Image 1 (tube, rainbow, N blue to C red):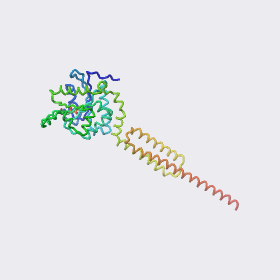
Image 2 (cartoon, helix red, strand yellow):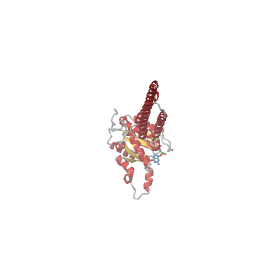
Image 3 (cartoon, helix red, strand yellow):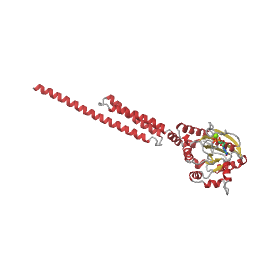
Image 4 (tube, rainbow, N blue to C red):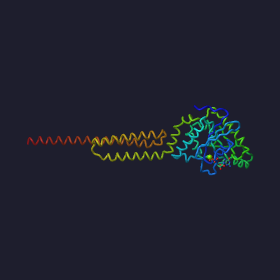
Length: 340
Ligand SMILES: Nc1nc2c(ncn2[C@@H]2O[C@H](COP(=O)(O)OP(=O)(O)O)[C@@H](O)[C@H]2O)c(=O)[nH]1
Ligand SMILES: [Mg+2]
């Protein structure tokens, strides 16, 4: 059982798209260069890192989490890797995480991709993670200041937040307006920025009950489903190949005109395999429905096998009847000959 967070510790988990300023913000929070800052927006620190510091009389721990990119996370193996990285990040903080900092670059448009990322993160951490643990941290506060110098009258960051509409405003509302602006280059502003951030962390209803590995484990199904969806096209191809193989076997068995024990055994095996494939689909689908159509195809194949067995059986009965008739006629002919 994880211990409850005591008031003098603050454990934070940084999440966000590579290049938006996660590591820089981590350094600003800790007041030292704990994390590598990259000029190249394409590359990211390969490992999840953890940094410690003491600020404003608090023990601060920061996990520099994996870069989130919706296009990358939507791809099979990458989705699996991202989930593993997130788990590693959670495990690095056994006392639990007080707040997840969703790092976004001020000035970047909040697009469908960003929205998709938040939905993905809900699958990873649980549906209430934004509401209960999220703080939106905008970097590039210097860019905000430059934009703002041109405004008349000048708007504060709070005004700017209120002026936002659409999906980003929905996000602000969902996280109860826990939004903070960081200028990672302004050392003079650091103390105030931290103060605002720590105030938001202290204001979290979940304070005293941080997000732990136990919470993470409770939403394992969401992550499994995320991985299934990311692998859907590959899985569909694999299942389709298996269906094609079943149908091929059924077609060649349909050519048989007699249902001898060998053929009958082959039909039985085919049916078993078709039932097995349906079970495999049920397991691999994990309730997502991405294999629903293929499940229906397999069920239709099972019905085809069944009706083919019936056709062959009735053909066999017909054959037996004909042979009996032939035998009878031959006997009658023999008897008739005797009386000639
Ligand atoms: N102008 C400006 N640049 C920033 C700020 N924060 C980060 N950067 C720059 O953004 C780039 C990516 O930062 P980094 O912390 O490595 O991002 P990460 O990939 O999310 O960890 C680097 O070139 C940083 O110097 C900021 O507040 N203002
Ligand atoms: Mg980084």
